[in-house]
Image 1 (cartoon, rainbow, N blue to C red):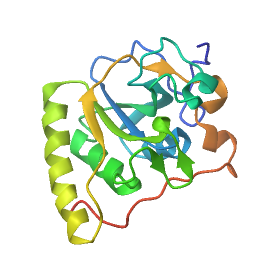
Image 2: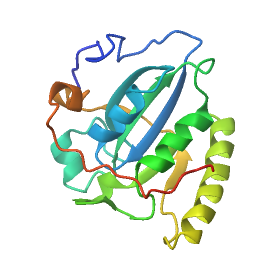
Image 3: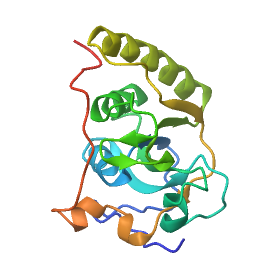
Image 4: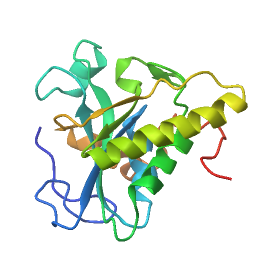
Length: 188
């Protein structure tokens, strides 16, 4: 997919290589427009990009992903500086910004591409993701929510979404964002 290489909000590159001290994280939280905005606003996040992952079709486009036949999830890639923000903080934003109990949907957005997912890049991220899922599941259950349906898998290939999707809500301030949390916090 051909995309520009500058983040519309902060001007940093969207494409690797990234400075060596930075780390990658990848999350699926429903529609990637609102998810990306949540992360680009955080201090310590160097750049973000939206794309497709966790599916079977190489280099899919939006139309293919929306068909439900590629198996991909709409995801946001987060490139962050661990000296300024740690992975636990990113997980808190992830859990608190969407409803991880909805299965293949987020609000009015329905389909396999809108599922909740954490796609880890190293065993440390995996372990933190699994622990945070267990902790948040207990908080959700105490509030009457059903079980978490979030998939936690090793990060696979990240396929960039079309250029018009990148930082969409900054380019289109009145654009649709169906992202909403449960109101439950990760910590007291």
